[in-house]
Length: 322
Ligand SMILES: NC(=O)c1ccc[n+]([C@@H]2O[C@H](COP(=O)([O-])OP(=O)(O)OC[C@H]3O[C@@H](n4cnc5c(N)ncnc54)[C@H](O)[C@@H]3O)[C@@H](O)[C@H]2O)c1
Ligand SMILES: O=c1ccn([C@@H]2O[C@H](COP(=O)(O)OP(=O)(O)O[C@H]3O[C@H](CO)[C@@H](O)[C@H](O)[C@H]3O)[C@@H](O)[C@H]2O)c(=O)[nH]1
Image (cartoon, rainbow, N blue to C red; front, side):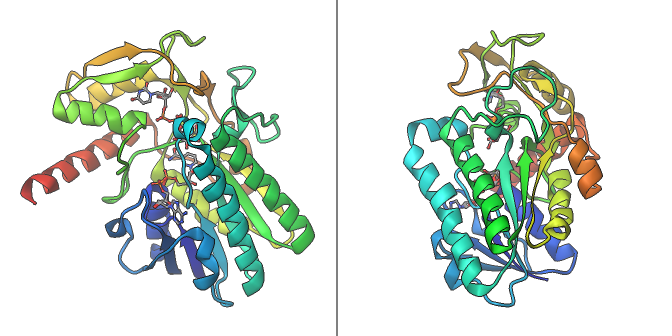
């Protein structure tokens, strides 16, 4: 299939692009490189450096589907700089949908997020029919897009799938997290392991067994595989929503312990206050993805950390020889 991947120079989009190419698809990446990297786009894909608002210039009538990753995606930043979140994530998606309408492209796979659920009422795994009550502009904007897609499917016959990712982590064949500044837990812990500097624990007073926040860490290669299944599930006239997570949670302290075990390094941590907008527990129920997409995650936390560690060390070695 001829596919457009927005945000394909970013972390998740580059890994999905690699899998799409392996499966024989013809891929064009549209990315403004604001948080992505041109050299992260796998060989074999075309790259167009452009804003998602200008997707109409890149789409063609023979584009079969769009996979839409381009977004601003930091919960904390969305509370202090919301304008950019509404502009890129919501207005940008509206521009993309209008461009798809103009070219008759009727299938979309969208990167939604666990942040649409806000602060869950209990620690039970979140289901897609649990009430979405986002607590920050990032989650609110992603929920707005989920609802936009629902109306587009109903009124204009779009076939859309919203994949609500929980915490993506790990690396796949030389592709991993390269954010600057880096705010995500695992890359920060691995940098601490590499450089011998301390990492920070945001909040030790959560209502969890050890007081630190619990998240569902999903290997990026498992996540990426779900996108190929979602492409098949994007049937015109329907909008479907799937949570993507392992179904199990780990506290920040458990991730720290796993990093120490995998790297064999001490990794010092300083305890600090909670980060504004951070829910205490986010764990996915992946039942619907298992039955509806035939998807299941294959990797656990130790393998996810090990792959991210290999990526971190390889990049450090490449920097040294450069
Ligand atoms: N990483 C996670 O844990 C996670 C969890 C839930 C949802 N998501 C969602 O998954 C998607 C990918 O996230 P990621 O972690 O790979 O982030 P990323 O920042 O690595 O990738 C986003 C890509 O979009 C591009 N981009 C941003 N604004 C753009 C614009 N206006 N026009 C064109 N390109 C633009 C960036 O340059 C970057 O390459 C995002 O939509 C994000 O909200 C990520
Ligand atoms: O140096 C750090 C970084 C993070 N944390 C904590 O670790 C947990 C995970 O944080 P992080 O890796 O920053 O991810 P989240 O804030 O949970 O957000 C990610 O996961 C969400 C879905 O759960 C997505 O919506 C977001 O786009 C994505 O950034 C949180 O409790 C943080 O407070 C620390 O203690 N120290």
